[in-house]
Image (cartoon, rainbow, N blue to C red):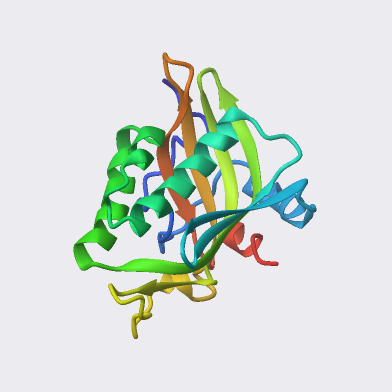
Length: 203
């Protein structure tokens, strides 16, 4: 299938928490500032575990393509909180996205670490649709999060994705509707500071 919106995104891939350092120019990035500034239609906080949550600012129009992305994001954090035992997140991803998501969750499980705080999703929108595929763009803010050890103590050395300016970044998800009618994430890509798309996610 032809992925118009993400065909040129071939830089390093990461999943829900850690943005890539190398930037790119996603479709529609130049016009994203107005979407970031617009007030959300609905704000919802999803509790993941004790001390861990995801705040979602829903757009005026919420559809299955957007829900596929937000479910994937939330379910990956549920998997991290469970130490990798909760594998429901694998139902929301396929192809490259499944490998990236698995690596993200496994990285926490392998080091016996987890996370605390609140991650924020906002300015979520569908920017391109091509048959059974689409591109979902969003802004992510993980500045309110910390990686913790097995005793829930924050690590002395926190990763860059918890610290400004890298903690606020632009997220692209290529989603696809399967034969069963379910939309799943096929591909992830990030644009981190100093990329212009990431700068436009600043509030």
